[in-house]
Amino acid sequence: MSTTFSRASRGYIVIFASVISAIIMTITTAFFGYYGSAVHAERVALAGTQAQALAEAGIDKAIYELNQNGSYTGENNTALGGGTFTTSVASIDSITKNITVTSSVPNSSTPVATKTIRVTATIDSSIVSFRYGVQVGQGGVSMSNGSTITGNLFSNGNITGSGTITGDATVSAGVSPVADQQWTVQNSGFNVGDTSAHAAVAEAFRPSTSASLGQINLNLKKTGNPGDLTIKVVTDTNGKPSTNVLASGVIPSSGITTSYGFVSAALDGMPALSSGQTYWIIAIASVSSSNYITWGLDTGAGYPNGSAKYISNWQNSSWNSITGDLDFMLFLTGVATSISGVTVNGNAWAAGLSSCTVGGTASYQTIANCNVTGTKFPGTAPATPAPLPVSDAQIADWEAIAAAGGTIAGPYAPPGTVTLGPKKIDGDLTISNGAKLILSGPVWVNGNVTFSNNAFLSISPSTGTGGAVIIADATGNTAMKGIVNLSNNVTISGNGNANSFPMIVTTKMGSNAIELSNNAASVILYAPYGYVEISNGASANQVTAYKFELENNASISYVSGLQNMNFSNGPGGSWSVVPGTYALIN
Image (tube, rainbow, N blue to C red; front, side, top):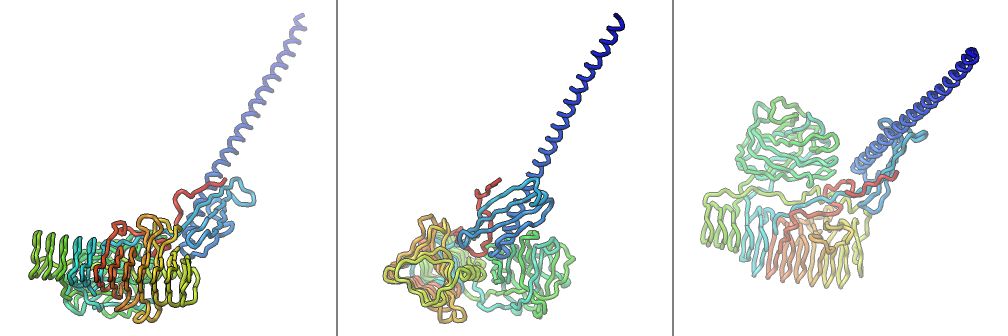
């Protein structure tokens, strides 16, 4: 019996061991199966994260490529990191594109994970700051016959006449129209801020006359979206820039475009410079390998009164030499300026005040027959000259965008309603007898611009809250052509959005650049080299000109929103992702 039990026990033990082994094997198999699945899932999840990051990198690269070349359409199977991506760029209109990027990890043939991201990109609107109802260059302002400026007025030339300014009136120190020192030969460029070593770049100069510094212009272009450029004027120490700052200023990045152009610095003072003594202009930028500014350079070093250098920190003394001279223009003060005859309801500030009425304070060096209600500040130096708000480079950028939209042979006179922009008209543009022009982007007219006899000018809703611009620039003939005439009940309006106004720009030099009369209104006028005349009850929202004449009950009514005026396809505009359009497709 014991033998039988022993045999039975051994049988049960074998069966039990087999069951236990089976259970253990099942658990082990399940564990390793789960572990394998978890590892695979983790691998797929990691690959998915990598693929999404790779697709986002593809979006960033597409934006970069568009800012280098607006016709960029994409690329295929570009290797990056642990995978590849393919980019497709589709144009919606002239200023809007859809960017789609599909990424694969580790490759598109045998992917562990793929991700597709789509965004909308547009040309970022640039901001032009019209800080005054009227801003005028050396030509000054003439007001008469009940004319009114509602807002502030800043002029680099005299203010004369009998009109009324409801805000403040400021006349800066007079600046010579001819540069005392300049070098404009440009066959290369030197980057400012592309590396830490180039954080500060400087050019030396020696004035030919002892006078105060009035204005500095630099020949610049930009890559990407750099910040504003800081400017310092310093003395010389042993052939290098010192840390003795005579004046500081800023050149806004919005005034610099992707093509070379001279841009003015807004300085904080007018230091006295001595004839024959060496001084330095220093440009300082934040460092970024993809967002930087390039200063035009003459590698032949033809400027006889200076040299160029660079350094990582302008306050150090170990400056490095640059082969060549950097492009600049330097203007000195010395022209007498004044306010005379007009009524200023706010504060008045000029070197001379005469035969005027001032409701606020008066700051001056000389005064005669001027009735001042507020406090007088005799012996006050005049204000520092201010650059005009739109640079030549910005105007050139608008023209380039317009030309890229195609050319219409002129003279062009549509009989009905037409929507234009971006577009170039090679000849005169005439809108009259009830015809209507709707701006959907910049329009460059290589000739004269005329709106008359109940014509209409407005802005397309497609520009959103921004404005749009017409440029009258007669290439090679700005002394005679580029005349803008708006008369006989012309209706001008935006697109219904706040602060959406058309701007009319002309590069014409001298008289008759812009004439606005007979009830035309609601427009921004810009003539940096010519005369603007408003008469017979006409009005505008803002005027910038070399010289300005306001007659016969005409008026300017400044709109505060013009302090930050956007223009679609704007100056210096660059491609960027439209917020809220990021979409992860898979």
